[in-house]
Length: 471
Image 1 (cartoon, rainbow, N blue to C red):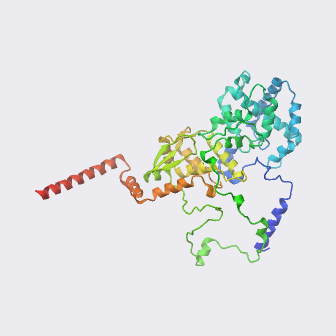
Image 2 (cartoon, rainbow, N blue to C red):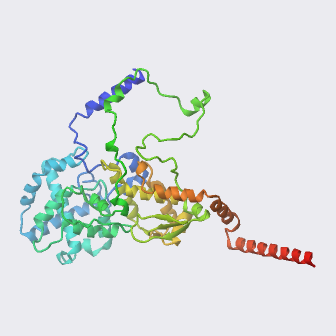
Image 3 (cartoon, rainbow, N blue to C red):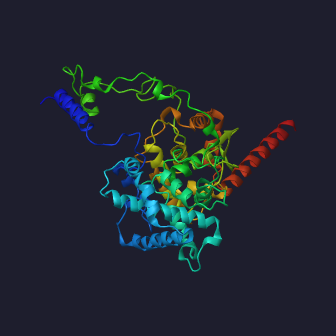
């Protein structure tokens, strides 16, 4: 079979496979992290729950998750006692949503209808009761270990924001409404946002709409993502990819008779072909031209070029550069930060119909600034990074690996203008000369003293020469 025939065969096979019993992509909102992204994290630890499994993907995996299964059942029984209800009432309500719940998961679920409904009841009621008790402490029963040991709450906050560890948001809203105290006006959205507030490593713009809109968010991770926003989230991309006229998929299978793959770069070079940097739009860039776009240097190199770093205020994502000063709001890095950022990035990678990848863009920006522990130390001393881990090398490695296998925002990269301004500043002759002077001759206090001494000696020599000539 020739290469063109193979391509046609693959296209037809994929088309036939797509006619199987798969859910529509628009229905799916809970996925597994793909292997390329998972393998960047050490053994995929950033995506694996530490103490609790929520939903079907991690159910029954690992003895370390079994203890919380007992607490789930305990919370359900306590809830039924407090409401003087029977669980059949909730099972019947959830059974009517079983098909919709199943369509939310991208993978085929092994659980039958009864098992899936009971899982939604057990996991959903536990989450609802957990966020409720976190705010209304009077509901906490005596000697509840979950609220007696702070590390358990911290671990639950982490695990409940894992990309694969989710149940549909509409299930949580329904269970909350069915168990809500009529005298309490706070919504589940409000309580959940309050529960997860401590996990966020910096300030963001919160959505002030606390109404329970079951289909506004897909799951808890989506809720947190939509309530940790940059100031620039109010602006829209210049042009959406949806406005472009795309070639139909079938176009790939037409007129391939003369198609052949080209040789590799070295073979082309041997054949006499030379490679040069081209100009114009890169394939995949839709509307804006990024000819001037280049990644910025690391913090220490920017410092050598005369750029000063100062702690910014307010929104974590509001990074500015003006008159040689880069202002970056403080970032807190603790044990849960890497897991949170990786799972938010995964959420952005799987979101449909949007170029709004502000967490991915922010991490890419920090990855450019941080090449080594020296860069972390420099930012830490200026109050930009608050390193609770203690080891600057750990933070450097975290950022250097976090954007691997992550698809970028292309022309919608939100820090594109900052990059251009920083590079223009660094490429100015005066700034480059000053950078070279600082790097080679003023890099230590002793070098500065020596330079000053040499300058003073030169001035004195000139004065003596002038004095001698005059007399």
